[in-house]
Length: 557
Image (tube, rainbow, N blue to C red; front, side, top):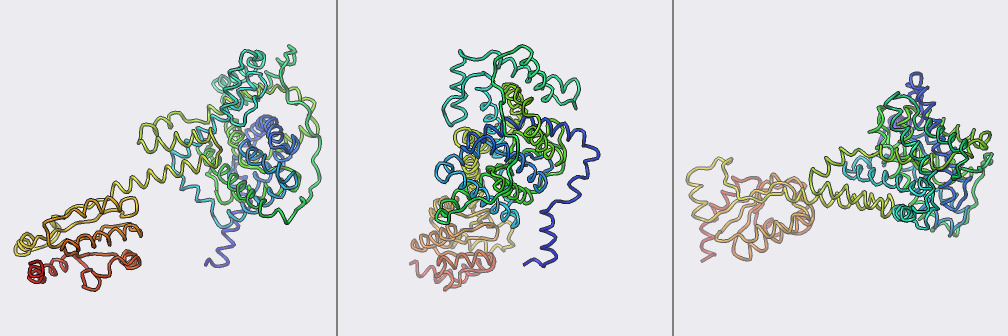
């Protein structure tokens, strides 16, 4: 157990400090520009996700403001931007139908408490166990989803009635005959601006300039395109959500799902952002705490669950955001928009913002990295492609679960294939000519087990060594066996039984203490233990075969 002083130090690392803003004197200009840019991009997303969840547009906007601020202050990433996300709306929709708005607020608060607890006990660091191909596959899938989500908007066609993003995009393309060419033109204007302006002036806010240009063109020409429209004009007062104890079991299940999704999406988003920004890497435990505080705050103001949002985070980094101030400015922009500028923002074409997100989605994917993984091993390529496909076909949690299962299977296969059961020629053992002759005369075979003997390799171990024939003694050297599980221990026991039943006596040498306990625990070595045929080293084993040779020969006769 950690001493109180160490515990206080660890908990202190999970709270905000002055160090969070050390770089601000040097980055405040780019942070300000990035925050304004992200605020403009986040506005239609927040409204749309609120509507999609069933809670209404205002809930999405409130979440972006409240959760965005709290996650920026308390979170573990310098560049993460949090708010409502598309993946969360999929989880929320059935909760709204079953428990209503008050149920969602309670679930959001419970998920926040779970996230804070997970960060406090340092579960955030488990994300580091996720393999590189899985992360890249997740990023590829998310980039594809962000791009495909904007296809109907960029084409100016009605949103197809289907929950799957890829299916909606395909339906929109099939309906391209009814496309609004004005919407397509505005999307292209923004995309061209985001590609061309950085080549002229790297620090210029390309996305913001592109959106401004597209809006001016749409207003000046009178093009008929979808616009952001009317939004809420004030924040509600904080209030505790209603709670029905009879629904606790159902609410807890939904809260666990939301907390898991928020943790996975936020930590993966933060990890992706680490590779995009030249800032210190995020603290995963503090990020969980920050997301927990953000969700608690969102529930008090009538918002919905929030996570780190990779689309807004990517826009933030690309626009020059380097400290938490950018995410805070993003929330401030949304507050100003809500209170003051709603008539002006109402005229921004959604197609212009679609152009921003489509270019951002393409920038997210490191195609060179994808190519290197695909050319590395078939297992890594399978993890990447399966995770990306599952992200598109299902949701983020399912995608990570599937990708992780495949990665584990690939790793187990790799470890199992490295396990060797080879006949030992004893070149490293100092034996005399007499002993060498005795080994040949008494038909003694020595095997060296190297690597890991677990459930993935146990069957191959049995098949390879159980066919030993024309010998009287089989010596198994276990000193180089690094990993042994219960299945492997049982396989050793089965092998001993098979060989002994054919008159081949088995001796084990160099058995590690932890392996000996496991072998004894599964009851595999009772006979060998009784006859003292588990010995410290190869010399003792050879001495046993020499001293017992006559008895063995007589019993065989």
